[in-house]
Length: 277
Image 1: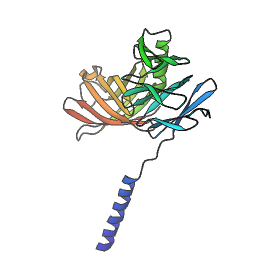
Image 2: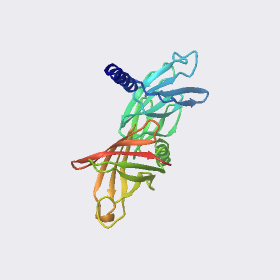
Image 3: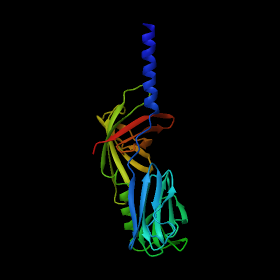
Image 4: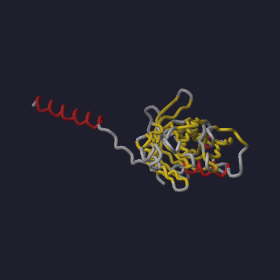
């Protein structure tokens, strides 16, 4: 009997360890194409590795070989030019741009930005860029700051809408926990304001405060860096509650779940939220 129990325990441990050690399923690669006239440079992001393929011109050294741009990449975009593809990519909370030479795929004019970078318009030898409220002439191996040309605001808005399309106008339901108390359910709605800044609102049952059935809060400072998702929740005064709570979470690979921790001074707890719409 003891031997049977021991065997069952060992079998259980084997399956548990196997489940823990089993590799996660890789996400399908993201593919895009950077074109200029008759030339096309395919791009592929797979498991964080971004690579660009040559334009299949036999007289060029690059030919149709794949060249790695970077690893640890969460998103990318760009255009083709007469001198080769301009590639912009996000890694962590930083944004990078590089111009790959059409002949050999060598990376040139590589730059780093703290804010997203979008292309206002491209040309034969480069492009005009916008990053936040600053604009640049990115061409001929240089990146010069310039006065923002016509179309910069629109390029920024369109770029941000594309980058954040998965979160804009979405509804979520979730719970947050505190010590050994029952989890508190809440619902959230995330949109953008007239300045194209992410904002949101939450509603939850009033488990503290006075004279209110529900507590409402506004979401601000919503920051998304790769799979990191941070925001501030400030109660709107309902029930006499108006303090702020800082949330720090991570987004699942399918972008349907966010989970992490909340902080108010030294107090902290966990939270999760699932997309419902």
